[in-house]
Length: 367
Ligand code: ADP
Image 1 (cartoon, rainbow, N blue to C red):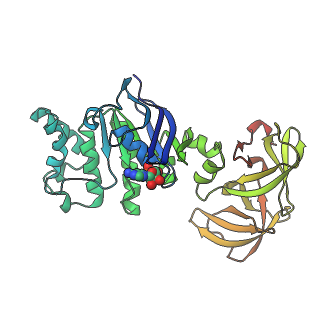
Image 2: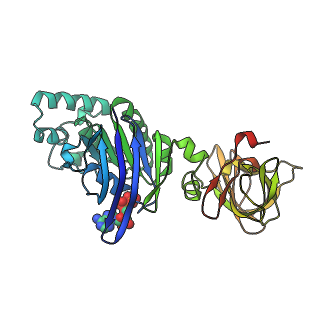
Image 3: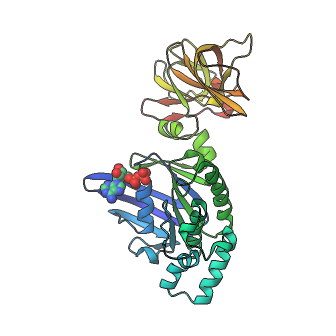
């Protein structure tokens, strides 16, 4: 059976184009994250799939059948909103039963589904409470439970974690990860938080500027970002981008120089890169570290130290003012204002040409 298919979906609000011919295929039990900055069209796309918004052109198919002409309730889709949207005057049980009663599901079947969902979500003891008597996390579970009882082919979750405090967000994140193994349906989650997308999704759909920028597994979008936007948006702290000039090639690999004078032999295949070309050199923090004593490093000044316990991030400036982030193990003793010498793993550098196109290091090209 096929899952969800979006074919050339376009949407404008008045004269403003919001989605530009978006196409995407999702497998029947995949967990997908729509990831992108605010205003990139994620919620609009989700609402089009749910039937809460019309599309101007294109098709939405679920399980092989076209659904974009169907009313939301007839699509086999359940949506969990950022604001739980529970009925405050109804008990948890009544909230969960509401959609099923309206759909004419028999009473004993409703009771069975609610019991099963309450069990899955560990809210069996809360069924007779009203939403107002519950914590934010519990209400979020009820909202998810209300979706589960519909036994949809597809769950849509709109920023499901954004209303929760940090501790609860982590717990709910684990619960969402477990949930996907307990339901036989695809899940699409909208988020602007790349950590949520990276930890939960089978594949991430990165959106920006009305378009899908990349679709890939978390590992793919992290290691082989399709363009400079994805490279900077995925990963925290973000990938540093240093201005570089291609100086030539060696052994089929591109050599670049940085304004601070450093010369880097990358593992990016030479391809059609020509000497003199301007590139951005993309470096993840884990590929920049403090140079060993005696090692030939690049002088830098540390602007900020972020100590996370197991590792520290050093936000540093090179001689020409360009910014780079280095990673150090444990609680770094380096302090703001310190002058340090940085070692760059040049073979891990990505190169981005002026049009944003990515050129990745090839493992076989690494020294
Ligand atoms: P995201 O979910 O990525 O933050 P949205 O899908 O909410 O993005 O919005 C995409 C763009 O569409 C934004 O520029 C937003 O202002 C615009 N937009 C969303 N909903 C409407 C609406 N009902 N009317 C007009 N413009 C809208």
